[in-house]
Image: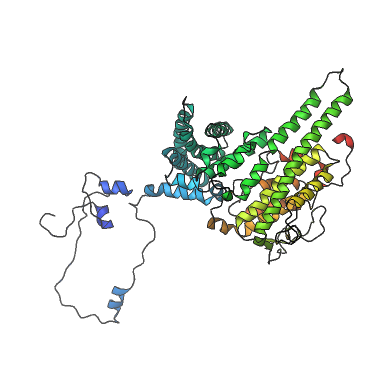
Length: 536
């Protein structure tokens, strides 16, 4: 009202919020920008009753006074004019980072992308992932459609970037992050066609840029995530990967080799396994395709045995390297693992009632200092299961002696002078198993489950650390394959997954993980099993 001091001419929403209004018509710009509903400028007529009649003074304890000072109940529901549009992106992004499987996979680089510290395409890819994930998880179709639409726009931008004739390696390395995020989107949608496109894009960017382009963070963590993704794809397709070249093992960490994580060292061994699977498949194919009667059957068998022996030697070399890694890990981190003080609960499924093959001691609970150490042990045992399984499949009658030989050579090469604190005589592997302690793959599978059981009881610690874990659930899936047919262990694994809010719902489908189950032979499960010679 003109001429009346203190009377605001702003909209009703700004008056309630007690902020200055820009008085734009018909809707206030300040409300629209902040995500509030502008209630306009029309004032409701207020009728007030006043009286000049004398009233008695209220006494402090009179009913009238108590009624005036009594608290008025207030509703906690948001005002009807409040809109959550302004907070939509924050809520969706927080929902994505609540998923630890993704958060650990995208450690550092996913955070930078969500904060807009990398580039526009990375930020838009994270927005597409967060909206689509939130929409699917909470059945909000509007957000789901927004995520799908933004995902499509990101794909078109990415296709244009990858389709350029001349793309500088320095410019292309920044594409690795949005491709990885879009790969996560395709995983949500279970779109295999899109996943194949993203895998080829990752491979193209890595080859074009070379290992030297990923020596700085956060791209180095993005490289590790890309390497793990391509590894899983190569295991499924049984195709050798270019990542087994040693330059991809050392160059990314050439600036400071001491910063190379233990799991990265394990991946250096893991990436050689797809090449072994490809060669083993070729040996089997040569047997089925040799129909020339002029070639003697004995000659074909001799050639196959030689090729199997040569391949077995390559597998043994990696197994020895893996055992040496285990010795080094024990010297550095043995103080961070111990026997848990709490016992197994009587009403919970545990390995206490059923011993693993070849082990008569009672299984105890493990205790780790932090999640990364349990992840190291899980991934180590996963690589060990692959190599042992291949040894038993390639040379079933020599596998036991070759495995033990690898363990002895690794212990000898890892031994320090006898009087030194780190000598092999003074290293204790309890409560874990020492390298070469078992011949059955069920034993490393059990150690995977014991390490994961600790994670399930301490899942809240995951949020306190930013360690990267690219293959969190792969080891547990392989352990499940080793316990196929054992309902007690299968139920134990299912209960662990469901008891952990981070992994609830994962792995319920069962089946073979990256084709691992198809390579397991009876002797890999039980070295004393009697199997006819013609089965091999």
